[in-house]
Length: 249
Image (tube, rainbow, N blue to C red; front, side, top):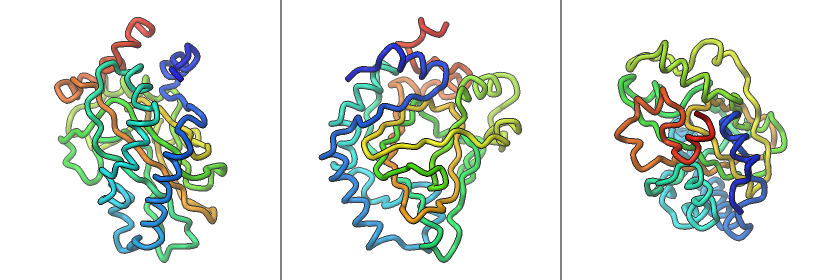
């Protein structure tokens, strides 16, 4: 099922679009079972901060049942509709917000940020950017207090302006103060829903006050030429999106 005209309009104006019930159930079930088995048997709370900052179950990142959520579900085709030529996707990031009642410590929250820019674990002069964040929902996320991703609607355009006019390589702030103060819109959904979000949309993640882990599989997708113009892509939100260029310029 391709992106509709309304989907493209939503993405260009809001920076994100959600395709409901998109990934086939059999792919969701295999991926969820894999992650859930690891969570029940292998979650080492001593590594909670590390997992939260990078990925949970890092040894599963290239597992075929996780990569299938992107490559075999039709999601890769959606990404190509937005980006045109897509670089190979070889890794899955697993993010879990653990119920606080199950923890002996607080899981670190993530403040408003743009991935790969001034990350706490990176040198401020290092960029690890990409073009499009794809998120596949693997657990019910019906409660905003369940560790839902929160994103700033239209924030991709505001961030591009900030990167053009106020930011320079080496600045340690991840977003401008006015965006940092925003709560953002929670991503609510069910297993099989897919989020397509422009890399420049600032987002945050908070506490999970429910009884159920929130599980997401993320894919960082790049236009094939992204690595050669990372700085320019921060300042021009449509540089990596040639199929959308005529629509927005």
